[in-house]
Image 1 (cartoon, rainbow, N blue to C red):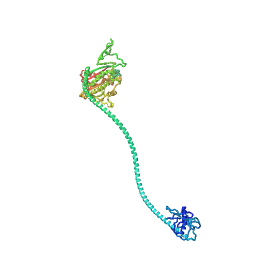
Image 2: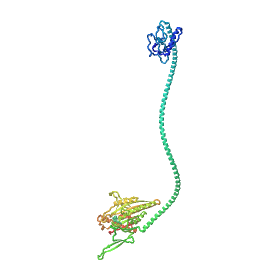
Image 3: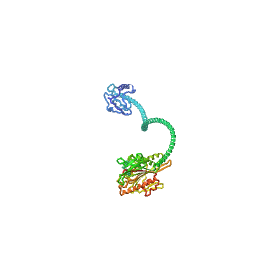
Image 4: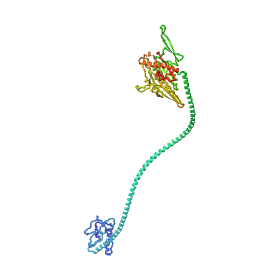
Length: 602
Ligand SMILES: Nc1ncnc2c1ncn2[C@@H]1O[C@H](COP(=O)(O)OP(=O)(O)O)[C@@H](O)[C@H]1O
Ligand SMILES: [Mg+2]
């Protein structure tokens, strides 16, 4: 240290005690220096500068001129130049953290400090200075010691700093470790969050499942209850079943015995049926295979003609009264009665039902396997078509629809006994000895011609004829309607409905009893003949005359054939040209009924 800072005399920062101390120190020092030369370490205040020069911001610049007068002199430690410069002691500024003792040596000039030496007292001054130097040296030493201490503490501090730095590094690495760990942990946290989300989802699902489980449990409980109920029912039903099975066994036994009884009864029934047929046949034969009925229709006003008389006691005779002119003219006209006997006579009051009841026996024979035929013979307008076909009303239905109804009903009953029937219908018109198919539905121009053929097994067939399979009454009624459409009718002066042709409805019946290997085959013929009126009355001419000739010819031949049949001497063959065509229906028949009609006009 070459130069010490000069402190302002006015600014002494030492404490009052120190300054007073200094003042005390100085005075005795001076005295001591005079008395003894022992250096006394004054405790005067002085600014001690450490290793580093403290900043002097707050201090005044050093005085360049020595102060004279009454100011205290500040003694700086340094090389003396032999010039005593009064100085002002100043307090040392505190520098850094180091604590430096502040020495203030300032004495107030002219005050209570050491007495100012006279200029000539150089020796005193030197001794003062030397004292001061010693003082300073002592201070320097202590400062150095302090410095050493401070250095030591600084070294320690540095060590500490190093340690701290090492610790810092360690902690930094720890921090980086922690950061890594933190990263890992944040990943874990993310995962954890994911897991917790998953857990939430799963919990929701779980709660859902729990709800479902509860529902299922409830359902299971109810089903268990139901199951129990069902089990109970089952056990009840099992016992019922056991009872029923026992009953069933009994019933089966009963059924077996009943079946036996039924089979037995069927046998008996069949035997009875066969017997009935035989008896019916016998009765019909006894009654006569050829039967002739007479039906008299009422007048248009509902009354009865005077010249027809019925015998009140029986219903088998009818008397026709005829007035005959006298040949001479002298006598009055005489009235002659002609009696006619029939198997049955139906008066004007007789209903369609009554007439059919007689015919129904014939129908039954047809089902029993006999060929039967029924003619309606009479003049035009006498009621043949009415009797055979009738009207559409139930009560006025004729023989054909009633016979068909009866046949299907009887076939149904016989079906229950094991019979199976097949029916084939045909409808033929014989006009001018020419056959016409009344069930023909094709074009009129392509209408085929027909011939009557007799096969080796005595069956009569007509070529190119429509044979329609029928299984119910309605089907037959439909065919009758078709036939009526097709039927050729000719106008005559007598009756606009009068038919100039014969019409033959034929139903072929085939019955099979598969169980008993029994078969039957028959034909039912219902014939509505053409009018038998006389030519004069009908006023027929030309074509009509030709018609009448054919009709009357066939009808008269028919009469002959019927008489021959009654005597069983008929040799006419249906396919012979001279045989009236209508006779084909009659040739093979075993039973023949005729309804003759008496016309009022006769
Ligand atoms: N028993 C009867 N009761 C009531 N009306 C009848 C009876 N018989 C025939 N008629 C009627 O007399 C008319 C002539 O009869 P119809 O059967 O056509 O005669 P045919 O066929 O013999 O020429 C018809 O109008 C018919 O309704
Ligand atoms: Mg007619």
